[in-house]
Image (cartoon, rainbow, N blue to C red):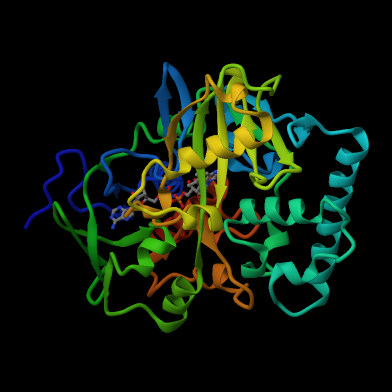
Length: 420
Ligand SMILES: Cc1cc2nc3c(=O)[nH]c(=O)nc-3n(C[C@H](O)[C@H](O)[C@H](O)COP(=O)(O)OP(=O)(O)OC[C@H]3O[C@@H](n4cnc5c(N)ncnc54)[C@H](O)[C@@H]3O)c2cc1C
């Protein structure tokens, strides 16, 4: 079947599989280098795990929201060049103990526990063989030790006993920013000029002959090279058949990752006890301690109540209302039923059950710290992998995915433009 998209090149230099951060950045870079590109995207929209949706007229991100690691995040640099509405994330969050504002001493105890954990993990990552990050947590972190482990587990996508010690502290997590209007909307703007075929699922990549032959739900395309940016969990499900099969080291790297899970329960809570805008909230001192909340997003009545992997996994997939019930129950436990009378749960994300993501990001389990780098080697100089899973200092982020898209594109441009 010939390829059917009216918007895409039929025989581009490079086919890009997936129109998320990595795909869009690769496409822009290749086009700037004078190469022709077609992006193939299974969903009916661009942006992948970055997407902004309007609730009651306010833009809210359903996926990535923070621009982490400002000084090294390419989306921040580009945003500044474009005059995008970036703003620094506040450093001080809210801290409540059993529904009451925490004392200065309690807050200091949490800060101290964070410092101790970070120092211990960084030291151990240099001194010890790779093992579970949890093994490096000091035993003497004080009463806030369990909160630190829970928060680190939330941002890693798995509990720290399932995360590589060598991988976890390599992530840069400070100097964060936000963008007014949402990160998903920003990434979408960046993809506006790129030729893309939406609603086009890639089923197979044949690299047995010259270049690559890509079989899709809209027909077959031929290209000189391909960049595959689909999430690791999607590749693990064999959504794309490679012929011949991928080299062992690459296949093993793909199958080495585990599924990081992080979900937003989106609250509309105009009379919440949180003042200011865009501040994290840590709630402790009761039976359920939510691992994290982001409050008054962009100064609106919207908040994220975050779900970590163990909690999200505990919900029955068939019960779509379970996350909402849980969020209400926990907030009532902290602040009382009266306080949540005007709280509405607008939406709960389920990236872990979405066939085009199957997780929030890819996590490196203990002992496999080298797999991110293994995936950077191209297959027969024709197939490159890119996406958040390959980034070392910005893994699991839109900035990391962007960085890796550019890396793959630069390598391909060098290769395809080299004199033969
Ligand atoms: C709830 C949540 C919160 C997050 N918070 C943050 C945050 O605050 N900050 C941050 O930086 N990051 C965050 N992340 C992570 C961030 O969203 C991802 O790391 C990043 O967006 C991944 O980009 P990518 O290009 O690697 O992959 P994706 O964005 O997933 O793009 C891959 C694309 O491939 C497509 N695809 C899949 N299979 C096929 C196929 N067979 N054929 C064609 N197309 C296919 C998918 O539809 C998708 O569009 C969060 C993620 C989630 C889920």
